Image 1 (cartoon, rainbow, N blue to C red):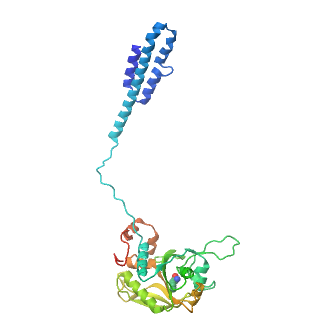
Image 2: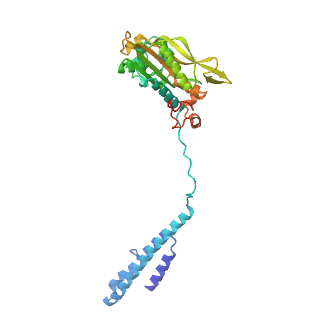
Image 3: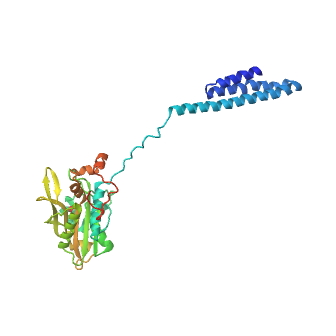
Length: 356
Ligand code: PHE
């Protein structure tokens, strides 16, 4: 028994890892281990012999088991120490800077435009981007055979075969929101409708998706003069300087008379500056709402009249912030977004300032 004790206690002390330890456990106190076999021999002994050998074997078994348990703990501690010595963390290092996202110029300009018109009593209205052809065309006095339909490079949605209804369209302008708003609130009304619009077109100043803000003001005696004042007021507030406008007679099916509006600018060294010089830049379409359009919106043209306009938001952003290529607006290039984006705390208000 003494031999066994020395043999195993020494071996356990010398075990290099848990696997070696388990091996020793099986050899000593496993079912067929040396100590276990000795215990089976107890049956062949005389009662006197057994009284001595039994407790001694039990004590040996307990001693080996505790040695195994103690060595197991020691091995685990050593493994942890080894790990701690190689894996370490310098908690005194300064934290990494986290990049904060920016507000896209389109969002920024939309907020600016909204703030200015809100100050003039316009509220914001919205409509769907997938429109029926009635709201996008017919209600706006653009019948099926009208050339304006073809000119708009419209995206049509798909209809199942055999379904003869006219397809829905991706709205080609924000003007359908005029009709939806008239139906909803009637007249008098004073709204702007910013949003996405779609046309199949792609070059430096055109993308298949772009942004407009529609304006609509109806009352008993709203005139072209009111339109001119509102737009001039808007441009001066938006560009932060007095901006001259030029109204050119034009044609839209949904307004009569119609005018395209240019703003005063200068071209120097390939960059455009608004509010100076003697060049002109077209920025919007406008006019007095056509009686047929009022009727389509459920409003009596003998009682109410007013103006509407549609401004390109992307164009405004390019002009105000000197961004030369429209396509980059929608490339999701992080370098571009960080350069042209706005801090989220920079939100425009009339009193806080609309210009950085
Ligand atoms: N809907 C026209 C366009 O997209 C703009 C416009 C709106 C013109 C309202 C007149 C009145 O070009």
